[in-house]
Length: 56
Image (cartoon, rainbow, N blue to C red; front, side):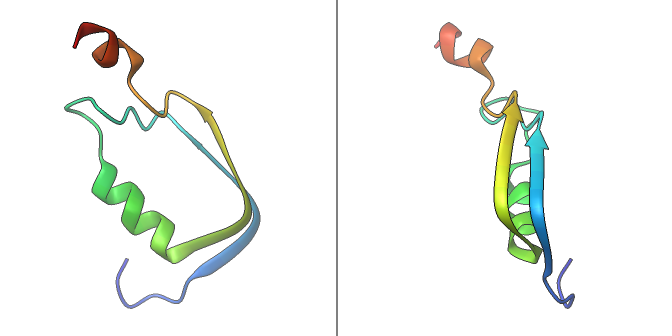
């Protein structure tokens, strides 16, 4: 996404990130958020992988 102008939205919904799991793409999410701005960001589900937290 480098080289692009940031895009701005009134609202953004983010889900199914599963931070903490091997399949998580945290770096992609960080890069996405660098180039997408929103007045309100809703974290609507499965942001953190709770199953992994319980097993630790």
